[in-house]
Length: 350
Ligand SMILES: O=C(O)CCC(=O)C(=O)O
Ligand SMILES: [Fe+2]
Image (cartoon, rainbow, N blue to C red; front, top):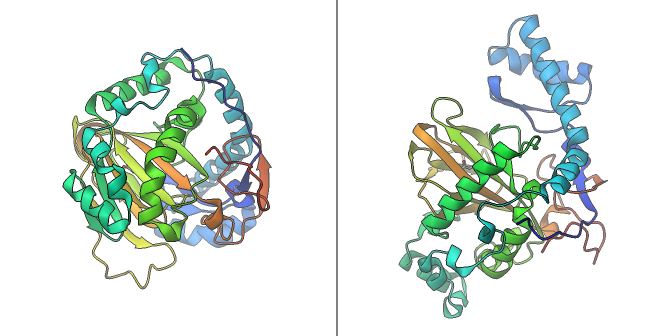
């Protein structure tokens, strides 16, 4: 069985997508590239400081950065052709394609009863009474999926990886991930999850971050292996509210650590970080612009489903990646949640 076809809509990115926030893993640095002269002036010094000292090392970085710029130029057209081809993908577990209540942990279903959704206090009370935790700094965790659902989804992702010839990397920080959007799964499964369950939560807990007006999302799976890709560097997400849902339990370590908010780095300097353990079926929910990183896993493998929920009402004001009013550019698919003008449904999957 393949997923039902989805009507494609025009979407938009900020033009900074093509040059900003390029991650150089070897030196743990995010850079931006416009041209060779600007790059050298802006980053040669910080690269040297991080151990990139010889000319050869520098030219290697430069060609890696230019390669990434090239990848981003082709990103949307390749995404579109992969997405269209993936419509032919045969699911091992066809029941994953549409959200069913049997996918959801019964504690989550109890927590989400109408009477608990009156206001933020009643919701949080219900959350802690149903296996959830309030970690401080607007970081929350709660059980969401059953273990069986997580197991089937992990197997499906592995099968998908094995059977696709070409797939886009969800980001430049995790090389083993799968884009659930490109796979097609998120447009059916996650649209329903967000509409029916997640938005009622974010509306109460993140009203200032567009929690009541989520109109698009990006979703992917991240994969870690103890001896190859154990951790994820510090970053913030290109979204308003982020979720990380753990899909397996055969690993140790891998805690998510949350720190300062973007733009408040100085003021938040002495703030105690929040550290959240990973648990299969558990969702960690936080503000996307709170810097975070994943501790290394010390054994095994870890796969998490990540959902970046976006609200055009917030991001149309300022692109979080460049910090400016977005310089909107049209793309055929996989936009970053910006919209053009009032009442334009563009980019909204919800
Ligand atoms: O590994 C995780 O649990 C979080 C991943 C993450 O923060 C991201 O991919 O943006
Ligand atoms: Fe993240």
